[in-house]
Length: 99
Image 1 (tube, rainbow, N blue to C red):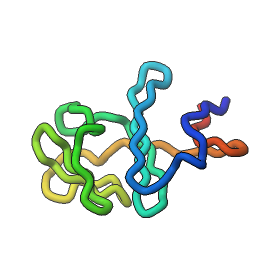
Image 2 (image 1 turned 90 degrees about the vertical axis):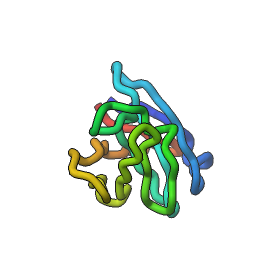
Image 3 (image 1 turned 180 degrees about the horizontal axis):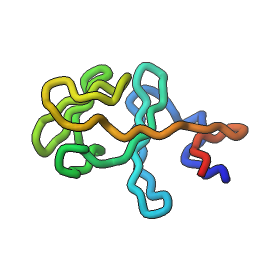
Image 4 (image 1 turned 90 degrees about the horizontal axis):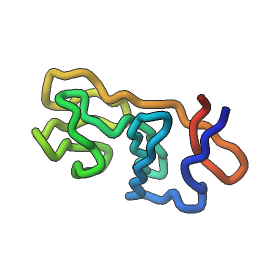
């Protein structure tokens, strides 16, 4: 089942969208024209990532400052689990995910 999150026309660099799907908080970010979908929680202690700072393709958690490489999801400067990324799906002019 496809769950639409956003229209493709709205996705440009710097885009951040928060969504709740089946009880999970998700964050959709566009970096270098590439959309990335992840859980909206830092794997370190669960802080929301939508308030983090973005420097190129590095997202830094606002709570403890842990930085994540968005290309891989791995932490740059700490030992903690990687971001939980989700596969994106497309349907016509919409982006979302398949459940």
